[in-house]
Image (tube, rainbow, N blue to C red; front, side, top):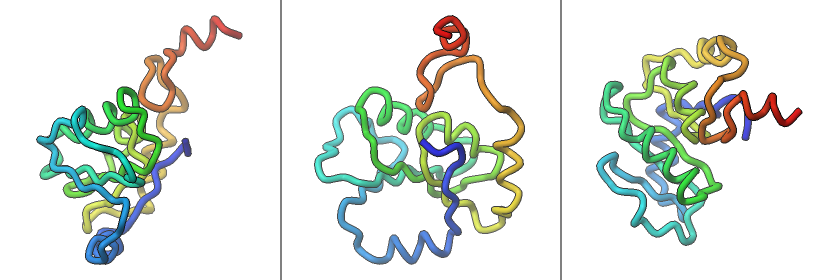
Length: 134
């Protein structure tokens, strides 16, 4: 997986969403992803209705770790720059930033920490296990 999320402007995402795109599944954040059919799905759009509602983080993590979904997981809605690192760590590959967010500031978020001690959806093993294997 890439080190950084792919960022998409809100207007570009809206244009893509207006065109019926096969293989795209948009899920509300209250949906239990355990029972969702992933057959033929290439991209899943998970929605953040407001920045304080983190249920889409759990959905992304479950799609990656428990369901084994390997396609694009896109964050939509009230997406702020300071959420991007957590989005990447929980399995998102793409984020549609809220219109008032500056995409050029996003890279700074990823430069803050090189590595993490605990495992996540991207790197499953915790850091201490990685060090013991070398």
